[in-house]
Image 1 (cartoon, rainbow, N blue to C red):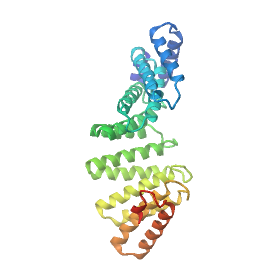
Image 2 (image 1 turned 30 degrees about the vertical axis):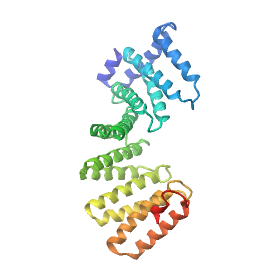
Image 3 (image 1 turned 120 degrees about the horizontal axis):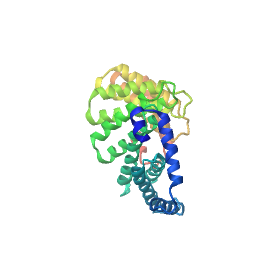
Length: 310
C-alpha cells in the first residue's frame, strides 16, 4: 500500500497520491454503504445543531470518532484530516472544567498521533502536525500531570523546530513553543539545563521575530521572565539587567490600550524591585514606582488584582 511505502521512503509525492486515492475511495463508496450512511447521518446532525447548543460538541465528537474509526480501516487520509479538524473544534469549544474534555482531548491526540505517523519527514505539513501534537501533549500534561507527556511534548517541539527551515516565517513560533516546553520541564524538575536551554531557544525566537510582528511583545516578555528566573537561581546581575532591558522592550512594543500591558508592566516592575533590593539604586525604585502608578491607573478600583499592585 502507498501508506506503507511513504512511511518507508518519506516521499511527499507518495503522500499526495495517497490523499488522491483517499478522495477516490470516498467518491467511490456506494451511498448505501453502512459506513458512509452513518457518517452522512452524523454530518447532518452536526449541520442541524447550532454552535451554542449544549449537544454541539458531543455531535462533532461523534462524527470525528466515526471518521477516525473509518480511517483505521481504510487508511483514507482525507478522513483523518477531517477528523483532526473536528477534534480541534470540539476541544476549542469545550470549557476547561467540562466532564468530557479529557475524553475529547484524547480523541484529538489519537488523530494527531496517526497523522504524524502517516506524514513523511520531507512533507511540508509535518512540522505543523508535530507542533500541534506537542500542544495536545501539554494540555494532557496540565490535566493529568504525567511527566511522560511533558517529555514527549518537548520531543515534539524539538522535532518541529528541526523540520522547519531557517527562513520559514513559522520557525520563530516553533522556537517559542519549544522554549515554553523547556521552561515547564524546568519548573517540574528544577534542572538548570532545561532553563538554560529555554533561555537560549527563546533568544533565538526573539531574534527571528520582526519588530512589527504581533507576537513580538509576547516573546520579549517570555524571554525577560526566563532571564529573571535564571537570575533567581544563579544571582548573576547580567541576567537581571538583561531581563529588565528585554521587559522594557516588551512594554514599549505593547500598545497603551492593550489588555496585556498591565501584566507586562507588572513583570518589569517586579524585576526592577529585585534590582533595587540588590543594589539600592534609587533610579530602579523610581522607575518601579512609575510602572506601578501606570498599572494602578489602568486597573479598575474593584478589580481583584488591584491590591497586588499597591
